[in-house]
Image 1 (cartoon, rainbow, N blue to C red):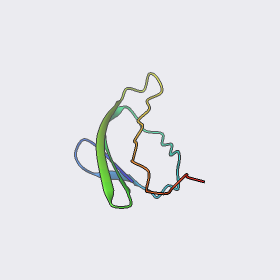
Image 2 (cartoon, rainbow, N blue to C red):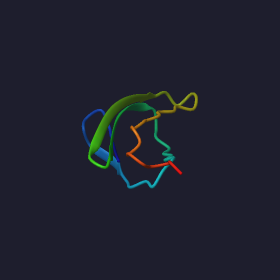
Image 3 (cartoon, rainbow, N blue to C red):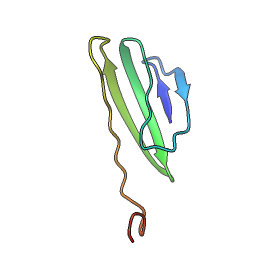
Image 4 (cartoon, rainbow, N blue to C red):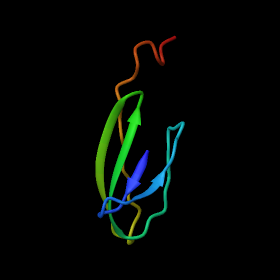
Length: 68
């Protein structure tokens, strides 16, 4: 996962085993890029600094995962 600022500079580069990832960012606009087994999602978020911001990404489960 990467978090970049409005100028395209990468601020955070991390690997998360999930299901959650938390980052504290100053107010501003950010681009979040996340990859799960080759499926990439890119989202933007505007952090205002006045309240908690949350961005949720969903992927389709792999076949057979979670089945008993």
